[in-house]
Length: 145
Image (cartoon, rainbow, N blue to C red):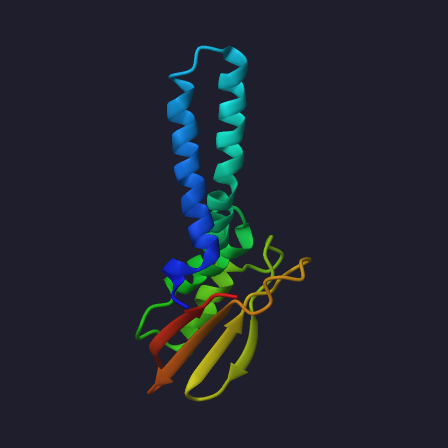
């Protein structure tokens, strides 16, 4: 199933269309009570789109994701393991507000981090996968939960 035809995306698009119709209708109605009702219905029909946006961009709301994605963005191709470790220390200082990502797998050719869910049960599989060649980062992959 393609992403564009998934029911939640269809529901979000229909909610946005319904909200637009409700808000346009507000300007055509004279009754104040009906205007308030239309605005409330418009906001309710917008909620699926808000949920989709939150699911696609959790870093807008959750600081754990912001820190983790900033750490990922800071990793550059060509960095050594020591530079990656120093970058991790910079984004996750000892005694800081965020817990350090867990290293799940480490060998000569790869290094895998999983975001620590801290007090929450989720996310538990948000991953950063680094591939190394000659001791330097050759590729990096971000895997959402």
